Image (cartoon, rainbow, N blue to C red; front, side, top):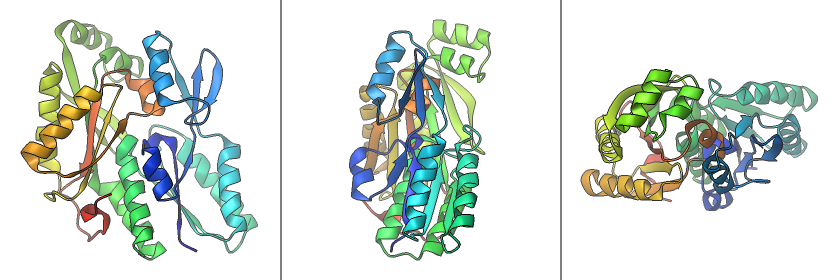
Length: 297
């Protein structure tokens, strides 16, 4: 049997891709007004954004233990080798929980193998790693090679660059101080962030959304692998106009042709609010051949 790819709902992959590549996606928990929902099962991302617009404050919880155990045990009983590609361990404890459960199941099923890789990523950066791993499975790459590839890709090769509209959400999460959040709202300052070692890091500010989108395009140009066939991920915090503008600029100015576009999912929406836009791509540090960087959807 082929290597089974498992991930969690922080990956923000569109449903059609999940179904096409038979990827198992385990749900994070979302809490609104004290009510618990399984992400993507009991509540949609759109409903989470609606709650934010109603000034509710959604919160997140780890993927439930029973979901993790049930899924891993199912494949252990089939003796099907698995690769779990997790949301950044710096942003959630889910990765460590999966590792503990995986060890317990492998102790009970001696011939079963599951590898847990911390992608140090979220949203479509994590999603692109998952997608490319699934494409490599479909292309016939050996499981050991896919696992090693996923480890290298997670450590060195996937970039996140993004901007958010409302600094208050970053203030609540401790990413900026109160003065920055207050003045940013008055001056229409948009922070530019990236991810380093699994953490979201603000590193620049620009004035206005158009300048923010322009800066994201510049960062893609500066950092990306110069391969117009690579898949570029774009996500937005319920702002499809910004996503379309970013996609158009990346296509028309840099020549990229293959895109995955989706909402920023519930897990990150709870922490960044409405109006953000992001680009995800393979950077120029890549040093190994890979089937998926030159494969369209």
